[in-house]
Image (cartoon, rainbow, N blue to C red; front, top):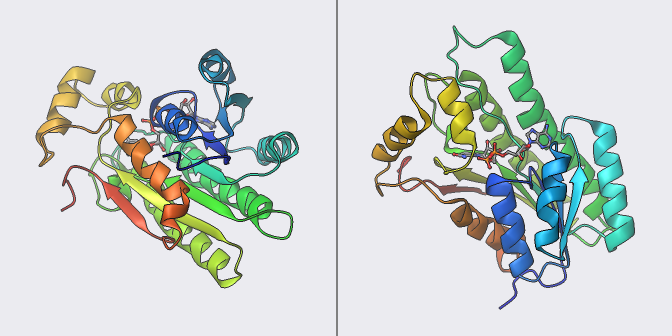
Length: 255
Ligand code: NAI
């Protein structure tokens, strides 16, 4: 069954990790076009040839003009936008005492401002009469639900994404835009982000991976493909009554 047949999707941070896993799954589910929108435009160019539905796009989620260009091009080339996944995000390890103001601002800039701009541009493109409705999916984290002593900036940013999602969902529902907006809250997922987290800690990437895994009731970390499965459900018409929801996928960490 092709659950996203004919849909046009844009995935930020789509060149690697969870974003690329989501893009691959969307294409397998019949999406007509999947825009791999990434700050690392060269990496998006490198992976795009693997699937005819993939279209690379250089986009910095913090730049309003990049969004205007990316969305305009998507609508003019592919006839509309059905799904936006605000997946691009960065993590910095640091406590309230150690995180620098510069690090704090950079995390809020990418994770919060980037998601805000994405939601705003997508709502404009998806709402009638020009648009045909759609689904917005925001990558928050278990760190948007529970605190961690050394994730001050990341916790704050992912908590903001969680509630921004609900505000967008209610705005669109009240106006009958046909636009749903939901957040995904993964537990630790094995991607290159591990390197960045390990760099700010006293552990090697492998030690950190094992420590994180030991704290998960199911006894392992998530695979990016498992997050992609949940994103596919939220993007599909099967989730037609799901909006403003926070979908936790964490192996029981927050249970
Ligand atoms: P990653 O670090 O492997 O990939 C992130 C991608 O986003 C990269 O391709 C990078 O170039 C791109 N990116 C970074 N800044 C950008 C910007 N300003 N504009 C456009 N693209 C930008 O990350 P991963 O692990 O795939 O995470 C994806 C999302 O899932 C993030 O929002 C992250 O916070 C969230 N998440 C990840 C978890 C994990 O354990 N890996 C757990 C919970 C949430």
